[in-house]
Image 1: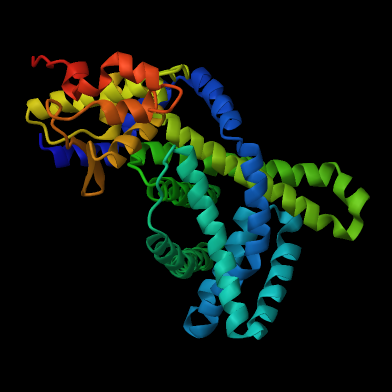
Image 2 (image 1 turned 30 degrees about the vertical axis):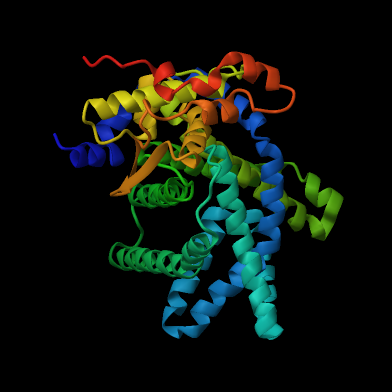
Length: 415
């Protein structure tokens, strides 16, 4: 079987294989890992930061979207479908209409700002997307983001074309539903349930695309879909739960009166971002959870040890005539959490000892140095003991300067 066939099967897993994976999934270990990673990355604070950034960026985002629909009147039906979707699917009914109405008024007034003001609004809108980019890369332990020009181009395209494509699909769906109602009077309950399931699937696919494309690393589709499905289901449950709470326990209305919409909306934004970040953590940790790999304790010298193991495995792969290994395959062979090994890979790439090759959307790691001729000193200084004044005696007595990389790797045995 060719490598491309294997990659295709891994990228788009069959439904039955996903069902088997879910049935045998280590749910208890997943819960423990999610709690640990949530605390480790301080995602509660990150969700608060994203909530504030979202609140500031909502008007610029809506302004750009409305400007797009205004420039092309033929897409007005798409705009109506998009507004209905946000009212019904993304925001609890209790706060949907007043929030959307206020944002629309603010966005309409933003057109009077002039060219400089519109540029500032555009920068504010992109700030949210760059914050999301930085957060997801941090969750995947990626130390190097894509070039800023590339990120801005991609996000600006998503900002302008995304609402248009989503509005078009929603408008077509709305037309099909209305046509069906004209023909049969009222839709059967099974069809209504199917449409609700379709909305959840659209959100799951959108979040999976976010988890797959935004981190500057190789994220498998099966892992991105797992995180996206969690976000869609949890988002739907949270929306219903918050709507029920606000209706049954009128705490906000009692305290804030007519001003209650704003704190409820802030709570919803924070809850939504918390769900998205948990889904991202689930997608990022899915490889280690699926293989039953636990994180190694952070002891002194751990990075150096993993670097030696990684280089040895890549050397063995080279001697076997293989065309490199993906980071997930390498982590599986070493029985190491992929998120723990990612910073080590980045360091070795910076040293030009390891190279990243990307073909057909899949990254492969290859060994660039010759272990027999490569001095070990740069790796020792980078990951074990820097050649500082306090460690000068250690370096003088250790004879580390004479070591080559092959001295620690040993000659790997083929077989």
